[in-house]
Image 1 (cartoon, rainbow, N blue to C red):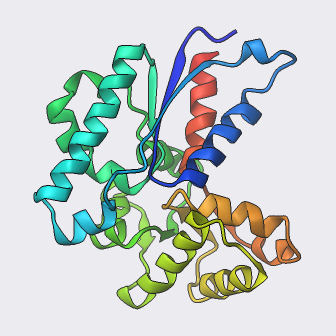
Image 2: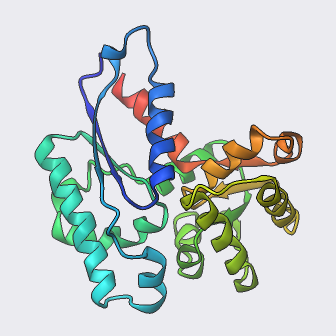
Length: 239
């Protein structure tokens, strides 16, 4: 039985949050469900678009609203007694410096999924990665900032609409073979087999493709899922 607890802050994408919760259950599986860690979840769907706030309103009303909403969720997790807090959104990590100004006491509890990703890439000797993430994260250089020293291939603005299409397909739970083929074609645009799933919708899409007739094609690439790496770390430090 695990004595420490996990706090999940979702609402950034229902199916991404659902997939993260399912992965926790799978990775912490045991012979009794009573052995699972205590899990808290705050899933607020009213949060404004993180990408739009970063691109068009940094420091403005919607930006500050997101900061306050994340901080409020952090306060709830602190009040509930969560030992480890995970934001199920890569882009949301861009707001953390301002969140910590409101709730500095939670900083040591937050599992920064991008920092955990960086540590794994370095440990595995990976030097070059393709970053597929929401355009806000790409344009602000969020992953490149965290992954200094690595060669990060960031898709240019001409690919932003395509990336948005894939993300929205997951958010709407509309996935089919046409989308699978389109995504594989998109990946072939870049000469890089090591791929960071910088938006938490992408692991959902990858899992769906692996269950389809396109599994052979998608398995030619190696994907780095920050949320999965975070679960692995949580299990290790909580045992």
